[in-house]
Image (tube, rainbow, N blue to C red; front, side, top):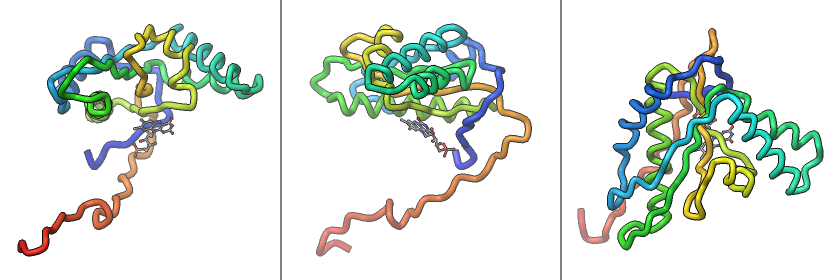
Length: 184
Ligand SMILES: Cc1cc2nc3c(=O)[nH]c(=O)nc-3n(C[C@H](O)[C@H](O)[C@H](O)COP(=O)(O)O)c2cc1C
């Protein structure tokens, strides 16, 4: 985990659908209140990435972007040969509210990114301002009870790609003890 890095540039090599299934089986062990499994993952390869580019460009244009900005959106999904769209699929539950289901689905996405890295692939979780727009939802076939958490871009690691150590966070700011007066 300390060695994991995101790879913004990847080669055209990709894991097979069978390998993704194997990794997802492991990622699916993420904590999940009430066992709702409120997520699904959609593989986008080949022309599906081009259609995603069209949808992003359409959403950008609808938001007032000029032709250059729309073209830039259209190119984004072409940065890898495989994109894994991570979807939160909200379930009816008296135990787990929607925000808890967001957390469970995000946990799966984090584990999947980590597992891909561990298997030697280059991966990077990406979103953007048009992730949750109608053209993009429609392309993925989302229901009204679903939302995208973004895409994990996947490919091979380029030769000579640097594998730097993560900057360490300041734990003193993020890890404290809640002390109750009178207790030692
Ligand atoms: C929900 C989510 C969305 C993200 N979207 C983007 C993105 O659109 N563009 C980007 O450069 N990084 C994005 N990131 C961050 C990268 O995945 C990555 O964590 C970051 O570049 C730091 O690199 P590292 O993972 O090697 O520390 C996103 C991360 C998360 C969790």
